[in-house]
Length: 562
Image (cartoon, rainbow, N blue to C red; front, side):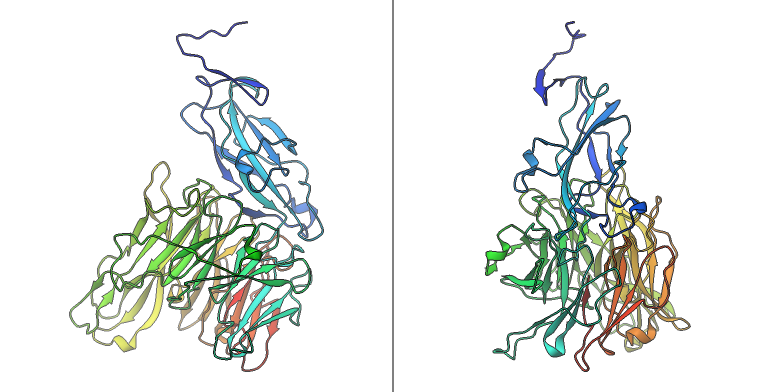
């Protein structure tokens, strides 16, 4: 039977053996979860938890709804050209009437290092049962199933890396079903021939920079180490040329920001704000020159631009991960009774895109508390952008939330030296159906210190960690749960870390150290030379499950990563 045009121009083309009626077909859907480059599931988790059966979700791509959607999932695409993959042997090829699909069986994965497997997926809308006019395919995305971002040896467990700057060393403790190894499996040391060069001040996990399935790390912001499946666990990678740290308030001077250009390789953000795009040849490079982020025209001189850095996740859902740069000393103001000026602060959101982070469309965020007023015994806020952080996808809508913190102080006019610093953290997400942004949640955090906690309570939603302080309770670490409506306003879990931190709050590491599919938290204490690990799950204990003890007088625990 010949198709009836009903006055419409018919454009016929053959795709995947099917005839598509482009003029009547729906638009390509928008892919949502898993996020591009996401790590999902654990090969070590109990089978009953079904962590190797990720749920794929998408939303319709235009005004014309599709009665059905075709989903394909394949592990045979070329890693360097997966955007053009024809999906020759899909493990999943289904047509469903819904906007989500979860496989009934585990996806096939490797159980030898590197464990897990990378899968590629795509979706298109079809008018009837997949056999009638269909849309074009949505852009291909990828997901690492059964892998862990901080797993440097590829065995399915996150590993703990601990900086000990007094020894110019970084200690590596491998994860296992019994927790971290009590003794280090590897110690990275500075070059003994150059005793004046600092080493082991900061350590950061990056994800998979060179696409070999093993997690990689950055030490001191400018030296990459690449994970391996055998001794010595980490091999030196390229040095980041031109690095210069301006980090303040304990903020990391570099960050693993995920895949900003959606090429299959994790990228690195370092100071001054610049991006090193990962690639398969990283192991053979001695040094690289990261691409400097374009400085937005709104930045102000001496505003401490780049004093805080972080990945933001995929905040707009386009498959390219985005980055945050803080400038906490912008917008200087004065107030009667205050001798020194106050900085209201700002932060900048850069969007990832094909080839590089985009120079255009940068969004500037200013302190929601827009003015400084000197009022005795009231809380004032300043230095917005002191901390910037990825919050995760707190409501599982496929769009990441992010956090920007300022400092606060109980103050009496004219007594600047008497300030006790607290902080206010604002959680931002994109307004549905628009390009505007607004704070969706607000919480108090000691010095504004918040961090992504992964799925610490193991309920399927990302969580946000924070330090809190009060005269009665002292210094505590808490986790605020994500939910379908966003961040739960009160902490679901807290632990007293007053003695553990001894007045020093540093950014903890998070990852699944025991392979149960739930995120865990590692907190360092360089005064005691210890690292305390709190294991996540449905019934988290308020005391550490594991404690790592480093050498005396080494500042072991100054920085921790998982």
